[in-house]
Length: 169
Figure 1 (cartoon, rainbow, N blue to C red):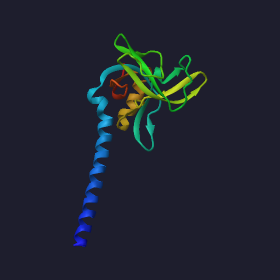
Figure 2: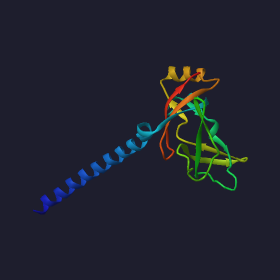
Figure 3: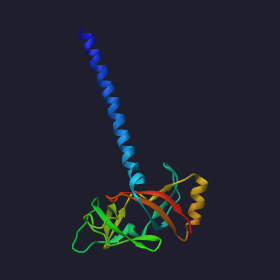
């Protein structure tokens, strides 16, 4: 009788472990796709930085005007702090407003993480800095973006952004 109970406990434990792992993976997938499902689309100007990474494959690394920001008045940010950047429509594109260390009252903003603070500015990452593509496409895109381009983003109400596409002029 004890042997059957032990097997049932082990079997139940294994099933629980598998279900927990699947739930974690499912949660990570939903978290990463959420901005693409419910976000508002905006277009922002971008410049390429580098086309490849030996470990992650071919990609175009993107930089934005709002990746380097002046330090907000009366605030002392540190690396690792979150920063919020309101977006303002400027014709067909959107541009960044003044960075804040608290979520703005305006409905459309980007939420990023400060990498470092130096020389009166903050370097911020938003998770939209790389566009992965096959080798030929990445090299062609890098060449096409030499004079700039446009990144199409989806931005959620809480400021998370996902890169949808990169367009050339």
